Amino acid sequence: MMVPFLALLLTKQVASFSFLSIGDWGDKGAKKLSQHMGSYSPEFVLAIGDNFYDKGVSGVDDPQFKEKFEDTFAEDALQVPWYVCAGNHDYYGGNTGIQAEMDYTQKSDRWYYPSLYYSKDVTAADGTSITLLSIDTWRLNGGDTFVKFDPATNRSALRNLTDVLIKHEAGVITNGTVHQLLKHFPEEDPSDRVEVSSDSDQLQFIEKALSKSTADWKIVMGHFPVHSASRFEHGDTPSLVKSLEPLLEKYNVDMYFNGHDHILQHIVKNSVSYFGSGAGAREHNGVNKGYKGLKGYMEGKYGFMAHKGNKTSLETTFVNEDGSKTYTYTINKE
Image (cartoon, rainbow, N blue to C red; front, side, top):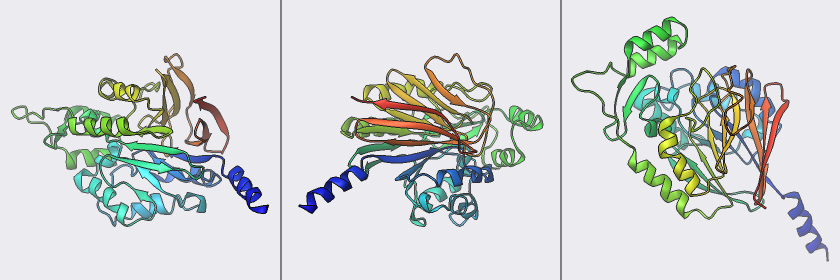
């Protein structure tokens, strides 16, 4: 008679799952958050790009892996899978740097970044099924503000060298960033311009992965935002609004996670929740409070997001650098 009771007790104890999300975390400032992250009991962590400021990494043995990842997030509770995607600052390490981040998957027990984009089916401790799709928004967007990139040929060039130098002089971009830009990306040759094409292979991969998923939750993450209420940073990414948003809506994706803009934000559009978790080691003041669909935000502080749920509900909480909770929202499917 004790066995059914014990089974019921265990079922009640594992009645939900949890995970954390953090983007733009690749600097020493993330240490302000790691102790608070360690107070949770996540089953996994979403690491949403800009993993190594300002230069990316030089190889799989780069000491930044230890300094900014292993030693920074050393709490026992954080020794769980970290699902990683690349940000623009990771690409500033050049092709060698991106390959090193993927290769580190074989060296670390928790770092998981096997390819530029990938799909991972996760079954949580409570039995909830999750399809996690990590995408490469650098390739989908054809580079970033400063770099033009063609995914078909892997050619790249600076969009405007003068603009880079002016922004560096004004303090908008750091010495480290400008060094990497000038090191890895040539000035565009007017007689041989880089023509940016659609990353059709990746878009087909995304559609196939989402169309076949029968998971309780469909989660997509990429560094660049689709929608963003941040002011004086990046804001919406028009290329993703055009190419990615229709797929998110068509296949009933529940959550899209991004970084890039250094605030925490939650926007809802056509039943998709867009969570911007880009304050891991960078902060920013400036939010368009009238942005359509904006539900909550946090600015001016480092922060991460904590998530807990089950098959039919998923709660997200914003946590800032002093551990206080500034916003909570629950997605309910019933």
